Image 1 (cartoon, one colour):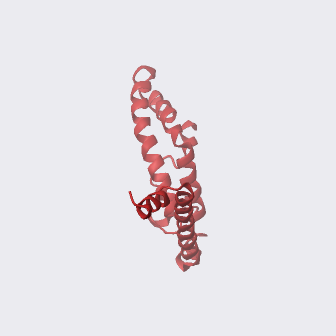
Image 2: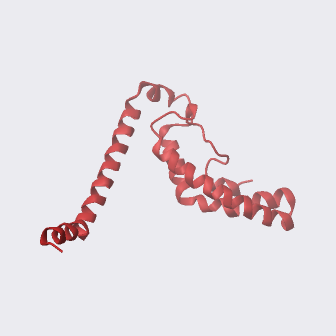
Image 3: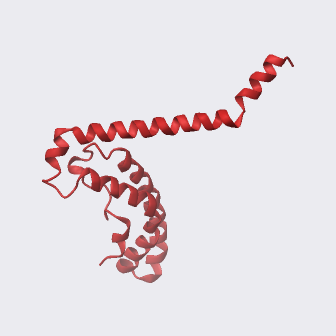
Length: 140
């Protein structure tokens, strides 16, 4: 193998280069998020819509982080809801299955809400899932 080829291969797999690529990607993602948040915050619709509704961009991003971090609460939450509706024998089994589905949905939706917090989608920054926050499953 020629020394030029050996040098090129060594350069491609060096740990320093991998770290550099990752850090550039993270910086680019952070910059894109900062630009998106700034553009959304400067939008006159956001400034005018926030006082009229209890749903705001800040609440939307908070809801997104709550669903992403605490999405696992959908499993015992659905088990609780289904047990109240159907009784313990069927409620626990059906609730566990539904909770797994809601867990995946709340995680994906949490990421979506974090990324789209500056934009009014859905209209009025309303929550897509009910309950709005994962801990609301346990309230009566």
